[in-house]
Image (cartoon, rainbow, N blue to C red):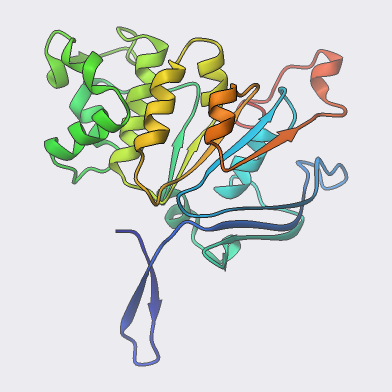
Length: 252
């Protein structure tokens, strides 16, 4: 269980469950303080909800997720995590409580089981397999030459992009975080890199209290119906329009 640690007046630690309630209040942000790209943003995500941000490249979807994990700090407003301003939370502690799955998934040399366990090093084999089943990865894993003991090399090049993403979801799920960010997972499903059926299966069977934040270019009618809230973001002017490439870690 994830918990907030506070010290009482007598010096004893007090723990309260971390729920994963996220609130943006009057947020302004710009990579350059003179050029605000997100203005007066107000939104919230409650524990257990499924939140979708949809829009074209450069509209600010990944920027929103990067603000949640404090890759960047805002110029104005507040971002609250269970009522705590995220600026008051140590970055390592904040980020360790967030499960993040990127479209460009990275795996390391080791077995499938070891790659999943990387999400929580103390996880048992049974917990890793349960996470794989939740992510709908168990079936393809069992068809690998040595199942969960199959060795992966070269960033998992012996797997498809969709299979790598399912392993990344399983890795995030085994950590049992209160919030899971699936950056561009909707886009991956739209491009056929990740089965939308498997993504929907995960959303239907996820832990009840797990809040899921999804981003993508398009959302199917079925995914839209599953989302508690969906925000469509639109770019007005962007370097892409001038033929400039994206900045790694910012726009993609």
